Image 1: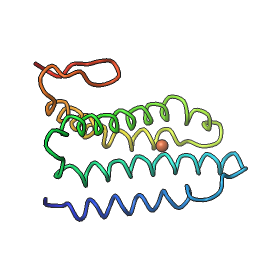
Image 2: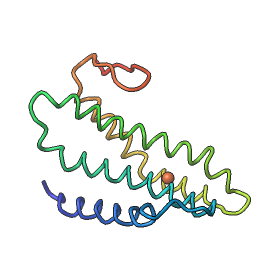
Image 3: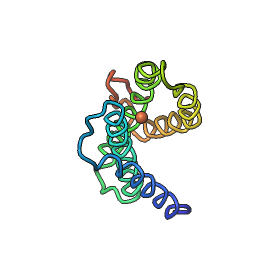
Image 4: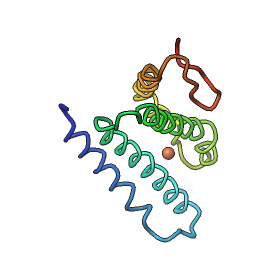
Length: 140
Ligand SMILES: [Fe+2]
């Protein structure tokens, strides 16, 4: 697959960036704790995306729907994380930092790609398949 090596390398590099701060003992300083926790969450997102990317071309027959479900859960979890950051998390620090505007811009930069991925994944489900937490139904 064209670009596979560079995508894998980029994801592994990002994973190492987040693993570093997330691999320390639990900080007692409340601001360091936030950094530690967020690094762990982001390491989880990157690690899961790497696993989706690496497995995508080798899904055993009969496991395609399960894999699509796994990828949809990843996308929904990331979407929820971004919504939570934008509406709740960064508001807690707004008296000290202006993180929200830059993060919202960053999230917006790849939101369209995330939506496109979700639409593609749903299109891979058998017609009428339930998916998501609201029991949405794949198109007939
Ligand atoms: Fe985050």
